[in-house]
Length: 176
Image 1: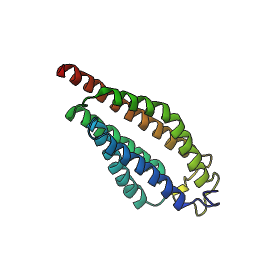
Image 2: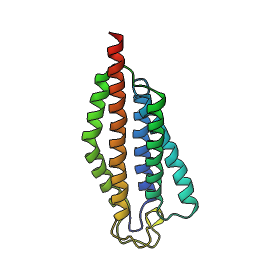
Image 3: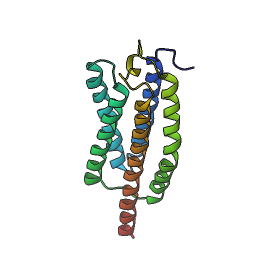
């Protein structure tokens, strides 16, 4: 088991490292053809770190959910800004492929996150739970909220990729 009876800061750190790594790889991988995605992912990572610092300063309660909210807001704000400032670049086909990969992977990634959070932060734990402590929410509603936010973020990334693909298609037509 990843966590013990009181929750595992190392387990949460591993989950966070995995999400940050996936975001950084996505940002670097999309920088040439979909700069809006890069800006959105970078904004989400930055806002997630800020959210961790803000939520953690008030004590360890509700931190994972607060970080998820901040990261989602950063992704949305910076992604929309990226769509206004940057245009997707040809070729459109890899962007469409990436869009569908993200859409199809979203449920699997959300399920994996829910399983990982459930393993690291056992339900019904209040004493010594650290970042896994959620006042009266002992049934794991916060973990479901984090999972739903991740699925929403992935669909937001798919939206950014799709719009970038449309922009790239229009740029391809202008080249011909």
